[in-house]
Amino acid sequence: MSAFDEHFQRGPLSVHRHERRGGGSTATRMIRLTSPAHAVVDPPTDELVLGLMLAGSAGAVWSWDGARANVTTSRRPGTLGLTPIGARGTFEVDGPSTILIVSLPYSVLAARLAPDLTVPKDFGALHDAYQDHPMARALCGRLWRAAGRPGFGSDMAIDALSESLLTCLAEAPLSPPAPGLSPRERQRVERRAAEGPADVPDLAEAVAMPVRTFRRRFQAAYGLSPQRWLAARRVARAQTMLRSADLSLSEAALELGFASQAHFTEAFRRATGTTPARFRREART
Picture 1 (spheres, helix red, strand yellow):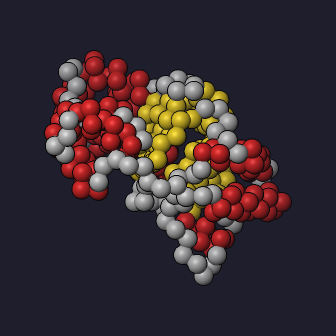
Picture 2: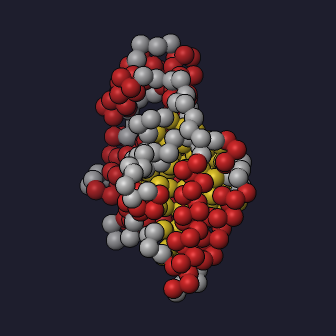
Picture 3: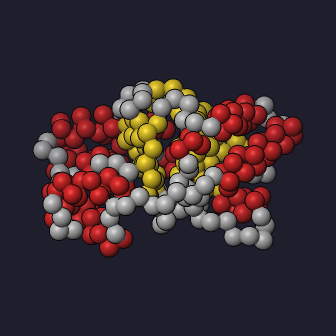
């Protein structure tokens, strides 16, 4: 099982309708997921993760935060998003959607692209044209179909298709990082957010900026608004708390900065499609 696959099984989206496939010596793993509106933050892994939106709302955002750049791209059916190796990914969608997720391990990328060459830990931002590249869509779709026919021929097809997709990625032009916050400013923002409940003015104060300037520069740095970033962090923290802490739901709501348990339940349900109580039961079984 890949690291991303394991993270998915433990995460909030695993309760929704999905199918997993994989195969080949490339250790390619795929998940086809149908889910309601949600906001999910995926931790960094040693895998390249791609997402092809098959159906759903046009109000979707895929972003990633890596060492070399911070990128956001709006998602609509037929477009491809990418989270580089070692980057933290965020996917938000404001309605029901179906997405095909493909993950490829770094060790395989290095061996396949050039055994004696160090493959960059991230591939940089994909060029805008690539997001709508018909070949990329076709390769992802063919990978999924090939993995649905287990056997030697299927493994060979998965390896060949994975290498073709990797070639597309390796040839994608790099984009320069968007202007935004400096590494030190980002550290201050994340430190303030980790200290406890915070709003946008609190974050702006941490880097001594006017709120309006902070909003603009934060958007450039992280690829999403500070409000959505804070909401996604709070949901991720809530998921961790519900898995491990013995707090009651009302205590968890206060710890997370919600005005009441009802407010917490509604916000959590809107983001993940399930209630905190149900999430806790299923995470601990």
